[in-house]
Image (cartoon, rainbow, N blue to C red; front, top):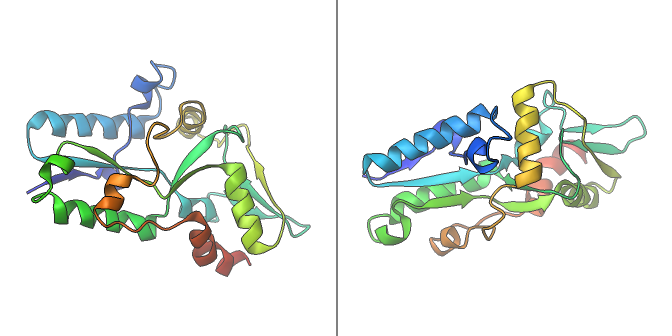
Length: 202
């Protein structure tokens, strides 16, 4: 039996360690990384799936990551984020299940390629400016990226600042070619916008 680290939806890197203590308050990153380390140290056969920001979350009304302005244009918002820094996005509804199934189906025959490895269930890695451009093209209406100075929560502000400065999976090819080789057919952000966003905001 393989133990797959999907703590609270996914595993994540240790922001405190990777930033050398600069971002020590991103608790939900650091706690997941600690559980992942514990599993690896246990000696049990395991694999880890790390995910990007759920693309769907940008469009939850209470999150206010995407809003229509009085003039009919839209704003795409992420606090504490440079417009030139990339973000790793995961189309949660489409791609997570496929990644999990591929790892569970193949670990017995391809253990040397799966066990004790970290995989990246990431649909795309782009700047928010590029994401805004993709949405704008689909909706046919102006979309502007805006980065507010705070989310109102210190942990979230540190999380976004950490991702903006240090990035997520910048050293890895996205989509993860190892998952593609296992048969995962990742979606694209263009497909995500057509499927999930255009129907609601078009």
